[in-house]
Structure formats: structure tokens, C-alpha cells
Image 1 (cartoon, one colour):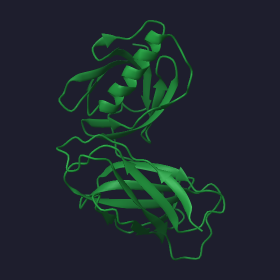
Image 2: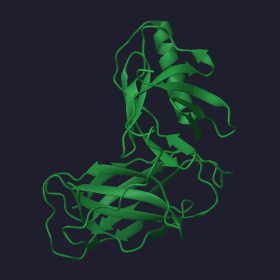
Image 3: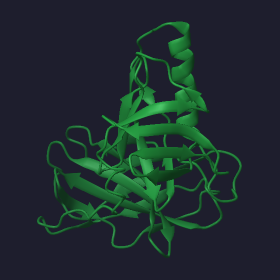
Length: 248
């Protein structure tokens, strides 16, 4: 029986787009061994460049209790991709251990509607996930306070913050609500997926600032880190969000 796992990858193109419309990449993940999945197992699907294998973005979904292969996935790419060749890497994990992984990325053509089947193989139980890429130490696991959005200072008494964890989960306070997102970082480039937030209501000026912050966050394509100050820029190098390290 198919168990549907919706995994959404959203990121901004940093080069000239090849496809102007959103695309959906779907298919199944399966393995040949007769092995039951443990409780709490998760499926992670990552979009990578070929032949380099550089990770562009990834997402993880919990496999429902008693979930069995094949597992169905659907990746909704809302932003245009650049010209290039892409592949999919699938991992079935339990805790920190990778139980199944495909030996090589499965080629994918985002312009095609054909489903992509990914066949994964059993991995040694002691094999951990490949180490995450290294990022500037001050950028990761640091609480940043937003000082300006679109060139305008933030409102007093309503802190807007950002923290990016080592696994690229991002979030903080948006002035009224708490929010959550996912970052993708490569050298001086950074993008954020759409933010999911709690649903508290505040004063109109606070809500307007919050909406502007979320819009700016989605448009970010680059970062400039200078000591205790961080600027998030768009693809043209225009500053969108100014931040300082918490406590500075």
C-alpha cells in the first residue's frame, strides 16, 4: 500500500532560470530487501547537481507507522531552476543512522512529468549520514537580531530574530509570531524556503513589518558577514535584511 510523503523543496534560483514555471517532481522510493522499517523512520530526499553531486536543497518527512515500500513522494519546486543537470538522493533514516540510500543520484528532468523511481540499498547500521558542509562559524547556531528590513529600521519592542541551525533549519521571532523555515547555503550564497508561522494577531504596523520580513526572506540570495554584522542580499546584491549578533 502506498504511503504518501509530501516533501516540499523551495529555493531561489541564483542563475538564469531555465524553467519559468513551478514544477513538481514525483515518484517512489523502494528497496528490494525484505526488511521492516522501525518506528520513527524518516525519508529524506535531496535534489543535487550532476555530475558534481552538490546538494541544492533537501527535506525530511516522517514515515507513517507501519509504512511499507514503495513510498510515494512529491517535491514541489516553486521557484525556477537554473540550467543544469539534476539528480535525486533518497535516504531512509532511523535516528542518526542511515538504513537505506541509493548508490548514485537518480537522474531527474524537472521538465518531465514522468515519475522518478529511486531504488535504495541497505546500508551498514553504523554508517552515519555524510558530514554536513562547513559554513562560517558565526553564521550557524548564532542568534541574530534583525535591525532593518528593506532599508527601514525595525519597530522598537518587537524583536525580529533569525537562527540557522547546523542542519539548516531556520527560524526565530518575526515581531508577532514565531516562524520556521529551511536554509540552503553555498559559499556566499544563501536562500530560504517560505516561512511557516504561528497565527497570533498583533497591531497593524507589527503585522505589516512581519509580512515584509517574510517577503524579504524569500527573496534573499546572498549574504555578507562582517564580524558581528550580517546582511542578507537579493540576487542583485541589494541589501534586504540587516542583522547584528544577539547581545552586540
